[in-house]
Length: 473
Image (cartoon, rainbow, N blue to C red; front, side):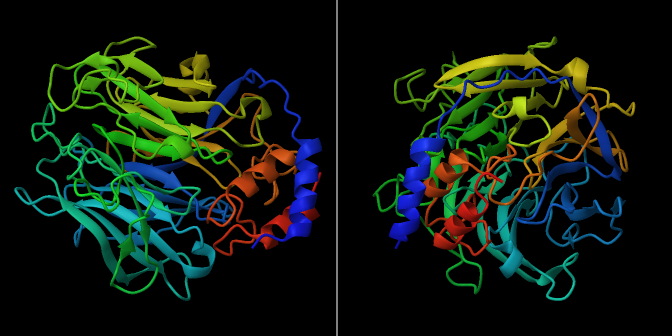
């Protein structure tokens, strides 16, 4: 139960501290700087909870690499290598199969558990797989491959549209973005079929030990216990969600969903309203009607994207959206709350705010970001990354073995340490521990993830005490 004394103090603080000012316009001039090169088809970069020194990078072929910031080196031995043994067709830049996603358990610092998403099987019997591993008991730079255990898998009829992003949400559950299974026009109608894993956002509670059960289904999932519909489904109607993220401040979920012949789209909902959403594919592409069956185009029951980009050249056009993150770092305070995303085919980079159901400050960032401050060029933006301090990175897949790069988003004046520095209790990383941080902590009470300052696996009175001890620091 909540400690009544500390909560009373928290309520009093909220009453005086949550005085919000209008959102600052994102006016800081931006650049990128190249952090790392020499990668082979990188597709994702991330950080383990509480560890801002090591960047974990997925190489599509089936390897996880570690970049050590303290020594500025890419460690020669992969953290995990399941290239030949498990992963299918991860060696081509043009193929959509491979090792596609990774998620650290919120309590990774103590239990060492992480999850990966990859494509397996062979032609005619392809599968999508979510698998659990542990880090090595004595060497944190190596995973224990012998601990691998499949959590969830399902058949996939074609090589393309595999989704592949996985993240733990603020509620402590694992979210899994799946593509519609591939080919064109979703020929099997998977995205609207509530009895299929494909074209969905799944949501499960994975076990961290043992082999049975490997996971349970949250009872709040929209089809849990229903006659029709899989218990694992959180939302439907996605074509190929290529990178989604949670806003670390408020839990909003933002999805970049790759279009087919006409439109790329960005979907944005609050975490509280996400469950049960239908994002419209295959009867809707963006806001355009496809004339395909499965649902009624632009019906009130469908969730429309907040931003679309037509298939076209030019700074508003795209052909394969790459979802990003809402910036919550402390290097550029006026960028706080701005979402960055891109297009894989055109290398367009955009940013925008989304507040109260309205998109504002939509900006093309190509001139600022396409060429880094040190003179290097990105050519295939396949993912974004967010470190433990909320700073943002861009993953450039490159065009051949060894040409993959990682860039950091920085002010045009250069990279520098945050002043004042971010501390664990500064959940929005804006330089001060205040009512905004307290509000986030209380909203996530009892869950794992955002607000779990002591990394105990749950947001509780100990975290509240830690925040109050750091108040105004």
